[in-house]
Image (cartoon, rainbow, N blue to C red):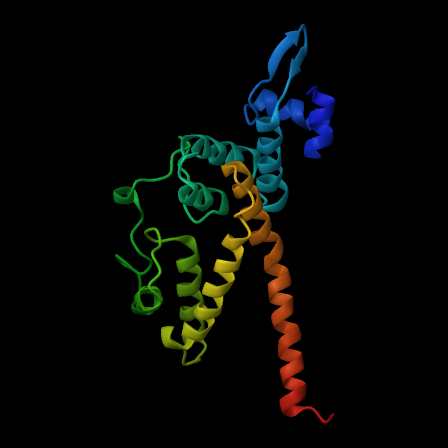
Length: 224
């Protein structure tokens, strides 16, 4: 296809496509004449993934380039590819995901305070209780640990056992997310859809929780 068709199919403007070509995010097309080239379905899928990473996940062009470089090396490993595009795994400037022995220490290790260490231990206990297999020190685990630490600092008695029912709901939601990737057979399509389902749906999931809270509050405490 010509670049005009590529733009129409991908939803990315021609000037932006040319910018991605110059900056190395998008591979060059097959030359057909002076200043002309043909593109294929791989370019369409690549552009859609770029658009998801920049426009939906909010990555910079530089960060997107690093993620795409890692994706190119991990096309055969869908699990690792999803971790890269969703940010569950950090990406080195070389474009490679870090080796396990290069991973950062778990939250709360080293000189961190006792509260941080307790919170990190809670996250480890929670993931063990759920039987979840995760990468070393994932960013999401740090968020959970920091949240527990903040709640304790505010005097709220909350530990990992209190989170188990929520973790069970999250486990069901994650299964639903991954079930929706089955129709996307190509790894780049799976990566794009994973970004959209994760980032775009999160505000809606929070809003659904608020609606459900209002409903159950009315049932328990309302006056009809």
